[in-house]
Amino acid sequence: MRSAATASARRFTALFGTVALVLAASGCGGGAGSASADGKVTSLTALDYYTDASEHAQWGERLTACGKTAGVTVEHRSVPGASLVPTVLRQASSRTLPDLLMLDNPDLQQVARTGALTPLDRYGVDSSGYAEGILSAGTYQGKVYGLAPTVNTVALFYNKDMLAEAGVSVPKTWDELKRAAAELTRPGRYGMAVDANATFEGTWQFLPFLWSNGGDETRLDSPQAAQALQLWVDLVESGSMSKSVLNWTQADVHDQFTAGRTAMMVNGPWRISELDKAEDLHWGVAPLPVRKPGQTLVTPLGGEVWTVPQNSSEDRQRKAARVLACLNDSATMRALAEQYHTVPSRTAVASRYAREVPSMAAFVKSVERARARTGRLGVEWPRAATAIYTAVQAALTGERTPEEALRHAQRTATGS
Image 1 (cartoon, helix red, strand yellow):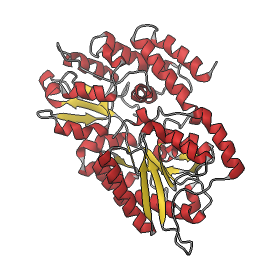
Image 2 (cartoon, one colour):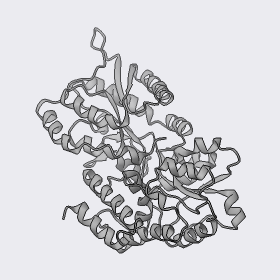
Image 3 (tube, rainbow, N blue to C red):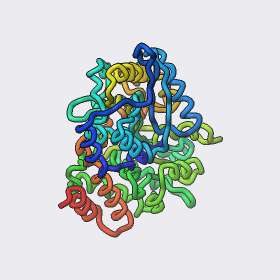
Image 4 (cartoon, rainbow, N blue to C red):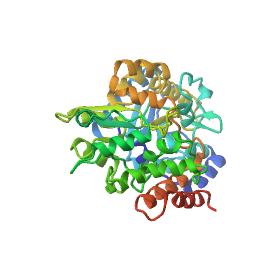
């Protein structure tokens, strides 16, 4: 599974106003789907960013199977992740949108704002049984425009052998995390690793610490936010975490962990396939620690939503909605979760999955209270995300104290 945070860096906000005007003035024409001589819809088009050959083929099989339930064939096309939103904008302005569109969940609100998507309640698509955070990721102005078959978030991976050798328990609080990281640090090995780089991926990794402590992207200069950033500063300054985290991606953090150069790391379930291949690596995964007992862990929600774009054919839109509903039924959710190490989006399905796949239990638990990154700020989220990772960089390099860095971040995020 790709990092949802990295994908969320694809923002092309300046073009949306133009697209919205085009859509409002002319409506949307159809995609390339075809119809029979009697006007019956026989095929639909679908667009996503699953360009990896095996992943593209796997999703093609899912779309084909769900197309059969709707009585259509599905012509499946993928573009590179960074090209998806610009491609959608061009198609919207030329009225050639696909019948089914996959979006990284933070992109949904910006695309929905243009009028390019249709609300799913128009077609009777069932959106019940989802956790609030998951449903909000596909919602714009109170209407559900997208549903995610599966989702993901981050948790704490740890090396079982290293913790056992050091006599260290899996940390549940920040103080326990600092003590454990210190005791696990050896020459050539750090106790803890995160991705603190200057991208939305760095922000994504910091959010659980910010949110779980009561911090909020609307008030980055709060004491709760400063406490969260101070934790990371303390880990670096004590030598329990490498200063190189300023440049590491989540893939780099994974490589440090598998090479035995860190005993614990923050990462996502998309790493499990590779972890399972690592010989002699005995790893476990647990929910991330909170500052003090009794706090509720709140993590960021990753994953992609499927949507039905606006076009001039109600029949095609209804058929597309049937395919979307199939992608989000319980059986498909479970199959996709097993295939990609993700979490089924419906709570009941996820609960059964956690019992049967123990390595995913921490992620299922974390997803229960996970929050959509756009939940508070909507289309203004990218500005706040940039301010957050800039503050993290400034604090970890010692350029500013956490309080100073976050005061600056608040001014940047609000434009004041």
